[in-house]
Structures are given as C-alpha cells and as structure tokens.
Amino acid sequence: EAVIKSCGLAETKTARVQAILQLLHDERGECSLEHLREASDEAVKRVLGSYKGVGAKTISCVLMFCLKRFDFPVDTHVWKIALALNWVPKAATRDQTYEHLNAKVPDEIKYALHVLLVKHGKVYKNDVKTLRETLRHCEAGGEELPGEDAPPSEPTAVKQEVKPE
Image 1 (cartoon, rainbow, N blue to C red):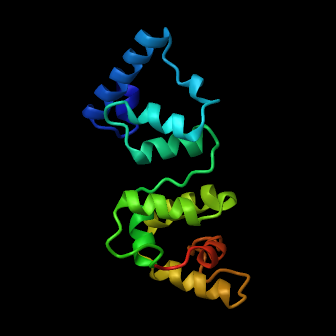
Image 2 (tube, rainbow, N blue to C red):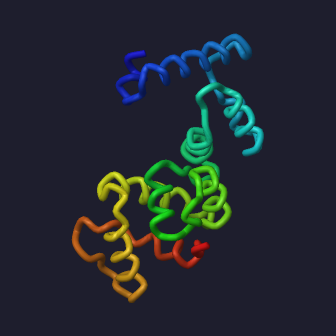
C-alpha cells in the first residue's frame, strides 16, 4: 500500500489495485497480466475494462507503455490541448478525443506526441500559446526552437495529419 501511495494514488486507487491483484491471484494463481501480452488490443481493452476502476486512459497507457502498442492515451493535458488547437470539435469529450486522435495521429509518432503534450501541459499548464508559436516557427522552416524552454518540434508532423473538425 505504501508503494502505491508513494506514486500519488489515493486510497481508493490502492484498494482497487489490491482488489485486482487478489482477483488475478484467485483466477490465475499469480498476480500478473503477462497473459495479455499476446492478446489483441480489443481483448486487452475488454479484460482490463472489466476491472472496477480501470478506465480508458489506464487501458490506453497499458497498451502504449507496457505492451508497446500503437495507442494514444488522452489525459486531461492531451484533451485540453487538443481542444485548444482545434484538433477535435469544441464539445468533444475525453473519450471522443481518444477515438478521434487514435484514428488521426500516425502510429509512429503516438508515443512521442503523447509524452510531449503531457509534458507541455504540466510545464505550461495546458496553455497552448507557446505550443502555437513553436508550431509556427517550425512551419516557417526554423530549425532552432525559440527560447530554451520551448517544447520540441514533433507536433509539426501531427498538425499536418490531424485536421481540425
């Protein structure tokens, strides 16, 4: 429990993780999800989604970070930035944003773009002004980024692929 809490998870999450581990142990004789490694993305989503407290973002993170699959998790940062950049309709929910971006963002940049947007969201509190300036600079052929705190230029490729609705 102390390890889970040290990661910043609330007591509710601790209880849910422990319940999932107990269920896995009871059903499979071990506290492991390794059996999902060979499963299809849809099967992984179905299995993980059956556990109480495991939602779309957690499932997407497991697919991308643990199973090395091409998936694009949408957390609050990604969602707010996608809305601000008009990558999705203004009324899009997080789930709709997940579906839209997973369809539009090229597989080969999903991981890097996700990490970039989360980092940008944390550093700049989801303010896209700096991100827009960086995109304009990159599109204008600038090779060096303006200011040393500016985010990397990876979004240029995405802007070309992810068209506003």
